Structure formats: C-alpha cells, structure tokens
Length: 113
Length: 117
Image (cartoon, rainbow over all chains, first blue to last red; front, side):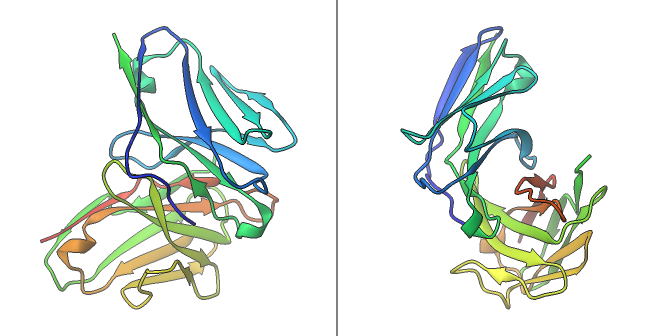
C-alpha cells in the first residue's frame, strides 16, 4: 500500500449547498473504489463504494461518480451539514493488490455557517 | 454492522517500554486485518497486513521486530510496539476486511493515539 500526498487540500462550502470532492487515481487496473470520511481524532468511516462496472452510485445524501476514461472519482454531498465537516479520502483497490487499498491524499471539507 | 473496536484509544508511555494495541471485529469475522499509521494532516500509511493464523506481511521500511503483529483469531489482531521511542508517537489505526466474501471493503477502528515520552 501507499499513501499519496503530504498536503491536504481544503474545500469550503456554505451550509446547505452541495459539496463536490474530487479524486484522481492512477491505476487503470483498479476495479473498486471507496470513499471514507475521517473526523478529527477518529478512524475513517465508510461512506460509499463503487465498482468499475458502474459509473454512478447513490446513497443517502451522497453520490459517487466514476469516470474511467480520465481515471477520476468524485463524491457529491447534497445539502451539506455541519456534521459533514471532516477529511474525505478516496481509496482504490484491484484484484492483484491482496485487498490493500491505495489512498488518495484527502480533502478537508469545511462548512461555513 | 461491521464494527471494529480498538483498545486503548489513547496511551502514554515512557521511552523503552512496549505497548500493545488490540483490534477487534465485533460483529463479523475477519481473516485479514490491516494496521496503519497516520501522521497529522496526512493520509493513512499501511504498515502491515495481518492474516489469521499466519505471519503478517510488512510493508517496505516497517520493522517487523519492532512492530509485532499477532492475528490469533478471526476477530482479534494485536500490534505491539516494542521498545517504543518518541518517534513512534503517532495515530495507529486498524481495519478489518469481511471474511468469506468477495468484498474488499475495509472497516476501520477508532484509532489509538500513542505518545512516547
């Protein structure tokens, strides 16, 4: 496994607006992608996942979009709430990796009142 | 479902002592658990993959004699930081993969904050 990036990008969003967090991945063999939310001082929390045979998946207030052509993944959060403040990580996995996850750098989401 | 616990949540120890961290999958069996280390404002760094009943697989640069991993059952893995030094201070997080399914999703524990004085 590897971690990527030493700098944490930040996204500030007005409460009630939609948030879009982006992630680029590098391995075209990756076939499974996960978004995690990590609040300060806590472990990552599973949000939503998507397999490479899909391009969109929806959950409660969240949508993940996958564009395999440009190797891009996004997480959309509808009607952002103060409780959504956290660092969001994308992670990718492929069959040859022994279930290890390759992590993105993370994006810190800040909610403005 | 898919709850993972870690104990302790926070530990302060003196340099040279050993610290054991437990990771438990509470409502599922996990043949594979992972141990991560995380520095402030950084992503997770995989230290080792722990497989039940066999030796752990360590990532490059991680000393297996310093970070002892034991995965004695399908619900418990332990990480022992031996002869801890201040540079070992970090946030240690475990995760568990659901067993018996084609399922790559890892569920994470709440983390253990280690401070070595």
